[in-house]
Length: 180
Image 1 (spheres, rainbow, N blue to C red):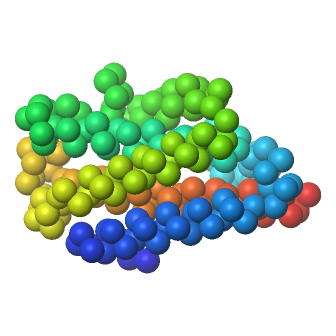
Image 2 (cartoon, rainbow, N blue to C red; image 1 turned 90 degrees about the horizontal axis):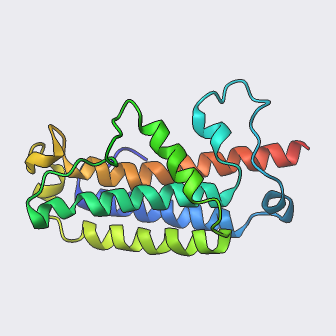
Image 3 (cartoon, rainbow, N blue to C red; image 1 turned 135 degrees about the vertical axis):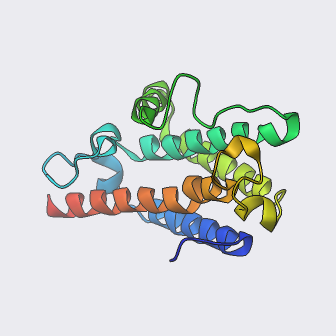
């Protein structure tokens, strides 16, 4: 699916990938549910997230946390502030550390609750999306606090693109479980 360039395509991509992700979650085998994610044998999987996330809960909470970042950040539109997208103290060079913080603070949350939180935050993001016009979403520099980009790219990143990332991780886990 090509990267969305308008509001309708963004809505469609986010919804499609969300539904596919939920279908994958629903169709997991008992072994996939029981066995932790372990990609250490795959030398191609070098990014930190392959080592970080150990189960579906970790993936869902990661998605939820990024939804919450976006929701908090778009409050700039309402209150005229210039709050950065990432948590205070983190930059795009150190956001991996922020992801680790998300991981650590979500370890006591059961998978069922993680799924509910993810579904709720997805709904909130999609509702927030509807409050933006096509122009607001896809005009670079429309909002000064976005930087030189457009806010639509952030919506794409925390929905359609991030859901695609999650599905790839789940597929890799499915493959690993089948090989055992």
